[in-house]
Length: 361
Ligand SMILES: Cc1cc2nc3c(=O)[nH]c(=O)nc-3n(C[C@H](O)[C@H](O)[C@H](O)COP(=O)(O)OP(=O)(O)OC[C@H]3O[C@@H](n4cnc5c(N)ncnc54)[C@H](O)[C@@H]3O)c2cc1C
Image 1 (tube, rainbow, N blue to C red):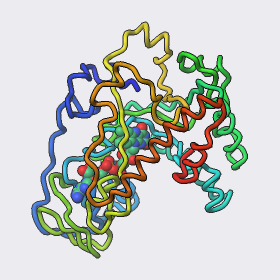
Image 2 (image 1 turned 30 degrees about the vertical axis):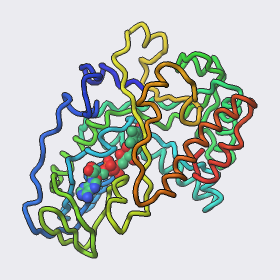
Image 3 (image 1 turned 120 degrees about the horizontal axis):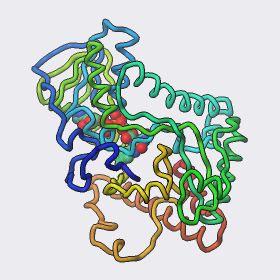
């Protein structure tokens, strides 16, 4: 993924521990912490996209509401300020599974709502003058093996069969390479329902807009427990009849939520600025999001892959060893699925099993 110099104007390789999206590589100016006890109509825990969009829409709907956002670090500290910048309608659960769990109508409505959300983010950021480099040019997933090509065709067919015709378009090799000129692209799938944006600019702009609408964001305020009508923090207690917990991957840190969410890692790599000739050759001057249809990694052994940081295993969680084993088994199964596809040139049965277990497609 290229988050290159065109957006940042600086050497991304020099930023240790600071997301590339942080302004000037520095931490954003901090807001005040909660000054003590207070009451609100709505208390929101976490100032990422979930918490801030919730605050934004509440205040647009009911401007008189007293909305307080409590953030342990600073707005955008979590995944919202360090993600890949895809604003997409790609759901990690196949529509077919949604159809089986609910109904065909529910699957269609869900997909339409996600498509609409991409447009809504564009509309709101324009209307609110939040400059976040929003560009809705779609997403392409490249197939580079016959098995991946078969999955590409299946993706289009499954979406059409689920009642969302045209959600995915099949690309032959020439069409795929016309979008992203990757080596060995045999074809792929394209959806127009995806935009690229600068998540750091969006999360900072959104936080400022929430304050402009009358909301209050307290930073450096760690919520220690959430009870009925009351949020206890390191700085005092907030009473509110409505509490929104918007802590995503941090959620298991609350004792009563320990088993609700399994945080998985996801990696974003920012390259050093690419020479113009390379960008032009690969057709990276467009703002189309892209990946390929591999399941997580290649399993290739070369000098880079043998470096000690590759496949470094973090210490396991003390509380849930079984969960840890299951999660890692799933990740390895994805690697095995790629190997199976390489050997058989057919869509992997392991991947199909994984889909059943995780719901992902
Ligand atoms: C590497 C990576 C790449 C990704 N790429 C994409 C992408 O391209 N497109 C996409 O749509 N999604 C992507 N995601 C997922 C997406 O970024 C997240 O799903 C989304 O940002 C979650 O937003 P959130 O507000 O729910 O959580 P967060 O952004 O994590 O916000 C939660 C906030 O809660 C705060 N908090 C936690 N505990 C407490 C506490 N006790 N008290 C007070 N505050 C607390 C945290 O400090 C944090 O700021 C990516 C995720 C990762 C990790």
